[in-house]
Amino acid sequence: MRAVLHLTSDLRKPELSDPLGSVPPMPLNIDMITIDTGDARKLAEFWTAALGTTIQNDWGEFLVLAPTGSGPALGIQQVPDVTPGKNRVHFDSHVPDRKAEVARLVALGAEEVAVHGVPGLVWSVVADPDGNQFCVGQPGEEL
Image (cartoon, rainbow, N blue to C red; front, side):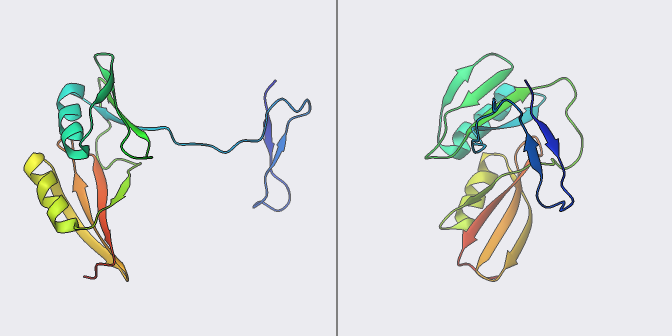
């Protein structure tokens, strides 16, 4: 049995059709964020050092890094043709000292791409050695 999504006249309120009640209501949890790469081992070395974690599972061209804190695991997946350009999904992290953390990541092989800010938050856009971008923010910091 599959559930079918129906849009009501009010497009902000989709209804889920499940005639037999076979799909229990449940929240969606993000358990892992996966990064595609041309060299899984090299990128895993960067991310284990950057996050202070270890490789939890190693299947050669697919590695899973152990989650840090209560966050999701990070998957590193080797693919034959990495999508060029900016990645469409990225993650954000908050740290107490953005400048020091960005300097540490740059020393590991990352590149600071840009710095942005809004009242009460400044963040750096950082690219890992494969060019995958992510943000490192410091709440309370002002430009």
